[in-house]
Image 1: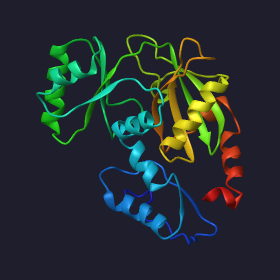
Image 2 (image 1 turned 45 degrees about the vertical axis):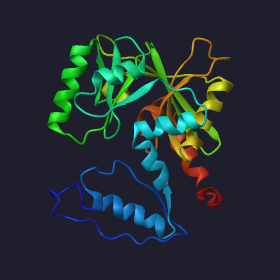
Image 3 (image 1 turned 90 degrees about the vertical axis):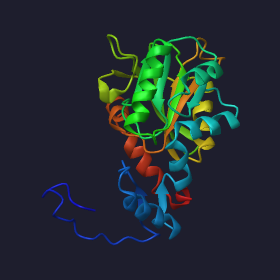
Image 4 (image 1 turned 30 degrees about the vertical axis):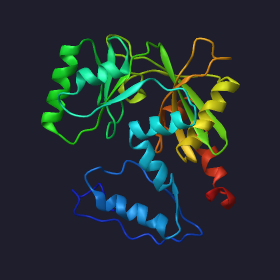
Length: 262
């Protein structure tokens, strides 16, 4: 790939890889360069092991598809409805069946909480949808019921185990998001057996091996299932590693066993 140094004019030296000794953990594939994705996904066709596989990447790349797969596996998720065109807001709200405020979000392409906004009334929803689709008519939009929380949970699932979990407090002030990259504070949290079970089940529902499962805790965490908000096929480990040092070592040690590559 092009080196980050030299303004894109310099290239790193080629790296020799083989299916026997190369595990590919790809991060942040640019959405505007399909050739990069074609190259990465072509490696899977040639027998290389990707974290995660193409199918998982495709499902998790769409919040709508993720919701479909979670619901098909009887996993509790917030209500969500697609907005199909610029004049579809009223129909979508009626089908959602929730009172304002609601969450308007991009089904795909959003990162670090960008592309997610809280909407207080129909007029604002209608105008925001119209403006978004005027800028890019190919955007895929969802409206989702708003569930007030003080924090959410990110669980890192590796195979059949939760190897780390963090509590992400909602950003103080007028924001409602809990992304660490936006300034939210991450803390250690002990998951209940039920939360671990749901996190692992969610990861498997999207065909994942190494995933970040985002959950809203229930009022009774021991007996009531959490809401699963989304599953990340390419989770970042900065916030997790800061709270649970050694998590990345656990992950790499796991894949030293070639039996865990498939």
